[in-house]
Image (tube, rainbow over all chains, first blue to last red; front, side, top):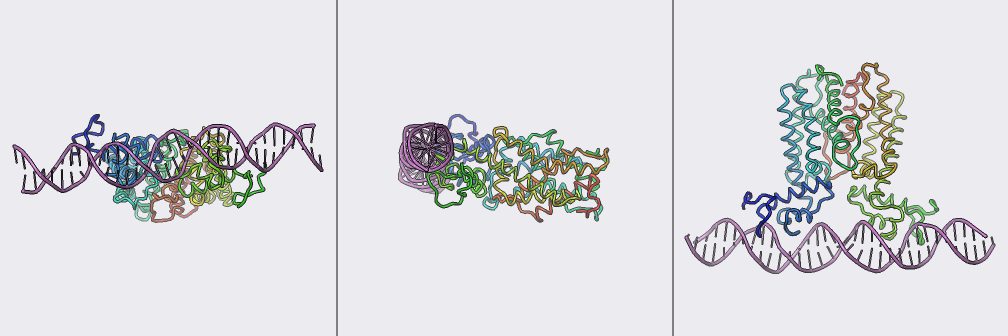
Amino acid sequence: MNWTRQGPGTERRGYHHGNLREALVEAAIALIAANGPAGFTIAEAARLAGVSPAAPYRHFRDADALIAEVALRGYERFAEVLTKAWNDARPDPVTAFEALGRAYLAFAREQPAFYAAMFEARIAAEDHPGLQAAGDRAFAVLRDAAARLAADLPREKRPPAMMMALHIWSLSHGIASLFVRNDPSRRKLPMSPEDLLEAGVLLYLQSLGLAGAKKSA
Amino acid sequence: MNWTRQGPGTERRGYHHGNLREALVEAAIALIAANGPAGFTIAEAARLAGVSPAAPYRHFRDADALIAEVALRGYERFAEVLTKAWNDARPDPVTAFEALGRAYLAFAREQPAFYAAMFEARIAAEDHPGLQAAGDRAFAVLRDAAARLAADLPREKRPPAMMMALHIWSLSHGIASLFVRNDPSRRKLPMSPEDLLEAGVLLYLQSLGLAGAKKSA
DNA sequence: TGTACATCAGTGAACGCGCGTTCACTGATGTAC
DNA sequence: TGTACATCAGTGAACGCGCGTTCACTGATGTAC
């Protein structure tokens, strides 16, 4: 098999596409970004990739399998982006934690198709091998960051890092869903989502005795 | 027009349904609860209501208009439920605020169709008169509660009630979306969503100097 | 109280559409020898 | 280096399906007189 001879944007091709699997994933990303997970069909993806409607079945069992592939790659990208944000903002853990939040919102804004496939596509992780694990790896970045923060606290005041991570994840996801996603039903907000999240995270960390050196929201 | 002669569950009827609009709304609720907003069609709703596929067009312009009606009623119910939770848990504002959070999650769990129509249906509020206002009224319950809490704080430490409300809304919505909704992609959680939310709200309020009398999470 | 009439909710048949899925096939590719 | 062959990615035609939407219609209801 030759994965490199023809890129997905190549104009002319012979009987064999050469890289149909990749082309279908890219088509799915474009369609989901434009119309949401529901506005995506195998037939349309095939059309975008320039093949007959039967061709995708050589690579994906059904539409869910293709969306699951998009979600899988989304989780991988998400983990990378979060890790990079954390690393780039170290060593101060509070600063790095805030950077994590901003990276979360940036991902939701800039990768709407990945975000939708990951969180809005109603795909059961257990039906698609690797999906659960990829999601767990992304969440682990948050959990590890929370553990790093918690480590600065005295033992008796230290909350479970898992719980901290879940709080920040939920807050970030809520803000992203309500105010960031480019969705017809997106709500208006009297401030930037980033500012809202940062203020929330700062207050949360303050309650734990962290973020004391930073300005109060 | 006669709104009471025949309930939606009535077996036999004549040429006129008598209460088709209501029957269609109930059918939409049942279908959205079962399959999500995307798994709902006008034709299927008509079938459930026992009328021909053309009949719904006498009452709703298209599927979005019907879903918007469901969302509208959802916001009204939501506002009622939140108000009741607040009132029943007064006078202590911190206790009442926590009750608000539990009511939020309970609504997401018990009224999946309303919740989906309100938050997941990709309906633009501006396209459906009254929808924006109904959503605003529901949010106002949260904002008023936050204002009541903020009133206990000294002026110089008092955060904007709007911001507090947005934080709690986002946290609640994030937890509901990720861990409560009965969705194929719902995440597992090592504790109850209610406990997670309560701990988060308590920590948040602690950072403001509220919730001091309550046990720390 | 009865009757004529306007109104309009619901009918049912029809249409075009795009989708998912299948199938025997075709032709390009790679490999064994 | 050449050839025969196996493999398998993609074809294209076909199918049944359910949907959205329209249309002239029908018959129930309410009301004016």
